[in-house]
Image (cartoon, rainbow, N blue to C red; front, side):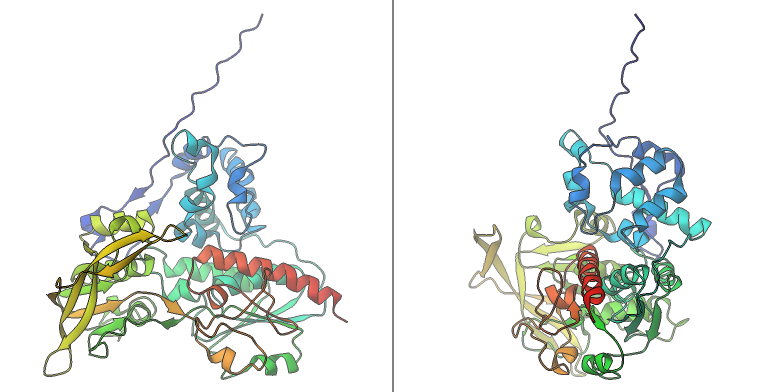
Length: 469
C-alpha cells in the first residue's frame, strides 16, 4: 500500500504584521502598521481552511468572497485576488486598515476556535497595496440604462453605492461638500492609521469606473434634494454622514482651547496642522491635553495630540473593560504614552483672563448593574470631585447628522431626537426614489457598516430604477 502523507500541522498563531516602534511612531504621522510582505501574506494565507461553508463571509457586511481571495494569494494570483475582492468591495485599501474584522469576519473564522483567526483584514490590505503598486484593472460594466442617480456625500456609503450603481449601467453624479472626496476617511481618520494617498487612490478608482465627482457642492445649499429630482435625476442616495459634534453641556465649554473631535481632526488631517508652518493651519495645543471619550475617535484625537508633543490623558466615564475603541487602537495608544483615567467625568471648565481653558473640575463615577443589553451604566460618587490642569480639551463623545438636508426636503422623515433619516431595511426613505445609508441613517458607526448600507441601497435602487417607467 502507498503511504499517505501526513497533513501539514495547522499553525494556530497568526503571522504578526510589522509596525513602527512606539518611541519612533509617537513622533511622526507615518503609517504605524507596515503591512505584510509577500512571504508573510503567503504564510498567513496558508492557514485558511477553505471551508466549504465559510462562516467568515456571513460576518462581512459587504459579502466579500473571503476564501476565494485568500486562495488567490496562496496561488500568487494577486490580480485575480484583488478582482475577487472588488467584485463586492470598492474600497479594500480602506477596509484592510480600519475595518474591525475582529468583530466581524474574523470573529466567525473556524480557526479562531482553536487559536488565532486568519488575519483576513491584513490579507485584504496586502492585495490592495499590491494593486496600488501594479495598476488597476477596471471591471466590465453593464450597458447604459439611461437612468441618472445623484449620490450625496463621497464618504464610504456614497462611494460604495456609486461604484455598485455605475457598474450596473446607471449614470452617477456624486456631490461632495468638501474640496476632496472620501468623507470621514479623509477628514476623520489620521494619516498614521489611514494615509490620505490610499483614500485618494480609492476615490480615483470610483471615478475611473465612470462616476462624475463634483466637489464643493453642499446639498441643502447649492442644491436641494427636490431640485435634484426635478433636474433629471431618477433617484437619490443620501450618504452625508454624521458631522455634527455632540458636547458635554458642562459650564465653560465655550472657552478657547476646547475643541470638538470633528474640528480637531479636520484641522490635523485635512488641513495638515501637524505640518505647520509648511501648511498654514496653526493649532494651539499646549503641553497638557485631556481627551474626553473612549471610542476610536477619542483614540485618534489622543494619538494625534501625542504626536504634536503633548502629554495626553484620556478621561472616560466607564472602566477599561467598557472602552468601545478597538483593542488594537487602545494597545497602540498606550504603547505610545497615553495615560487613561477611567471612571471619571467632567463637571465644569475654567478659563484664564484671556478666555482660554486652564483647568477642569471632574467627578469620580461608579458602574451600575448591566441593562437588558448588557451595557453597564454609571453614576456620580458624591464628594469625589477633583481638578485637573489643562491647556487643551478635546471632546470626543459622538456625532449626529447635520440636519441641513432634512430641513430642506419636505416629506423626508427623520428621528427628531437623533437627527437621523428614517429608512427601511434596504435604505428607502419616506420619499419615492430617495434612499439613505451610513451614519446619516444610523448615527456614528463603523466605516464598513456604512459601506454595507451603501451596498444594500444600491441593490434596492437598481431594482427601483429598472421598474420605473
